[in-house]
Image (cartoon, rainbow, N blue to C red):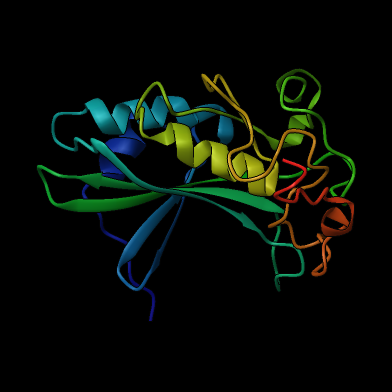
Length: 192
């Protein structure tokens, strides 16, 4: 039996962004709105600033690689877990991304070149201007998945080093790594 999804943010979003193609899903009581990447910053700002909604906290931000997932249409996604503290509501935003090039290990750029020369299919606008707490979360998603957050104030790797050579949470990354342990220089106490 089909039932319509209800959430306090859905009607205001549809009224404010009538031309945006929003895809709404619900799973275990959590509502997710998939938004086109070009509308992300406008929708995020609206959700934060609208007096009746006030999604003033970005609680979570994570990346997903759908490679090999049954019936997946897109390769990557970025999920934004929003919380309205005054209204005690939660909402998920999702942006789908598709790479335009090879995603296998060894095809990445250094941090200083990635915004200019990176894969245009993996670029999405940073939400740090809306929720400043996104800064470290976006850096982690960039480091692990290679998603490029345009407009980020300090987009560089946070868990691996600049020039690491790959993105470890992509599903085409080998389970045993790509030789980074074998090439790692061991520093002894005497040699330090």
